Length: 155
Image (cartoon, rainbow, N blue to C red):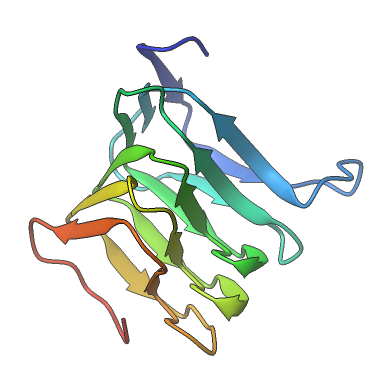
């Protein structure tokens, strides 16, 4: 993926496999553009298989990364089992589901870190996320704005 590209994910379940030795399923550094589910209906499930963070977004090179119609599921990390956004990244999370993720320290579903980081949520649902600090969302620093109705247990 190059900056400004749109990546369309085909409907299906994508899980971190045992052959992968990293602690993250997907790690996007300095990328802007769009990653979206082909059907725009939550039929694209990204799973950390209970052993890895699903996605980290680290900086977006001054652009915005849109994540649309995706399910972030079964992630596990110390901070942000489902999604971590940091280092002045700008992310729009649109019509996504953040479910069954675990943060052993903070932010089971989403963890937002660093002062210049901006996360905008549009119609995002949360369920079954766990963490001692912010089961669904934990904001260490940065800005989180909920623009439309989200379903969440505890924030």
